[in-house]
Length: 522
Image (cartoon, rainbow, N blue to C red; front, side, top):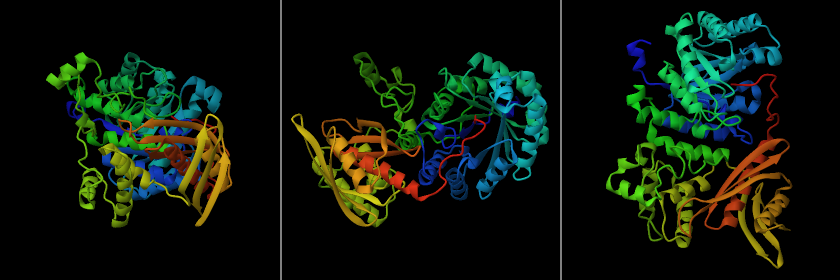
């Protein structure tokens, strides 16, 4: 690698909206994907892989919307090495400021024999044809050799050399099943960069899965070997055990610049907000001890650690919370605060609401201030996120009442507005939350299966906001909802209503079910 190239920032390719959405149980709407893409642009990732357009009308619509509206990053669409996929990908990203087509085909003996049922010569021919077709639409073409780490290195040299000659500008080496190790991957990247014809003219990329918990380590080993681009996801979400975690890769490069000599262009103060947004919209909670963005990442309980940090932060902290967008300050707001102070604090947090939206949020804030002694920044963000969901619907929870006890059958009565009509229904259940859910089902006339339910405190203290997350399944599709309130039953009811809204919105649109693919993805 030339000295000039070795000093360039590592290209951060975010695939949260494509590989991340392939996580079991995750199904994002067009509006939710667009919201995440806008935040990824604020995070200043270099490339957003917006989706896999051929898989469904919904995925196509999301990629097309992102391509048309999100400026700054390269907008990339995935396609198998076949004409219909590539043409559909181009149709989706044609309006992008900086479009990229990412085409792939499997190259390992096991995939070629059992999945593709093709010879290496046939795979090579398909790869070249795919790159040539993609190149006819856009100059920015990425080619991936699926399951590269279980492929014959000599065959990788042959196919990469051929697709570079055909016009590929980025060559991706995926560890599709999370099989490799850092030392082995370092040797493979070094070998390919030395042997592939035209390697010095293209970007070398890596895409690592986390089946053995080595995705980030393998990605960093590849950077040390000269890789130019790392493909990763927010919170490390993705198929099976997930992908390399973007925040871990980025902060490792930043914190250990002495080791890698390269950093990224990511604006790290947006990391925390991006993580929270993805957690909220996917319904995939971040484990407390998760590196960088976990709730405990900057927490110290041990007396020795606390004493050390108070005397000198660097004794036990190698990063500052501020580096990822966390602040230790508290809001100086309470039930006596006025609209002006409330608006100014929202602006400081990055929320610019209209007068009507501000009034709604302020009313909710006053209600909360009457029930909570202390309002924190996290409380305020929770209010805005709950009051203005990414995707609204025709179902609004107006009120509910529950009766429950260990000597009585739990019963709930709910009042909702649905299709502009006020409806009131009652039902019994195994507990107060279950009774509310049964009553909501009656109000809208559907009975989805509740697959997941979780409840946690957003902030500290006995008056903390409760955050409920539910995942419903209906006709083979999953719908996630989230609710916030000081009362856990109310939070649970809001979460269920939010998930029902997604379900009802999706039922209006035909053909949203994803096509079963004959081939997998990276």
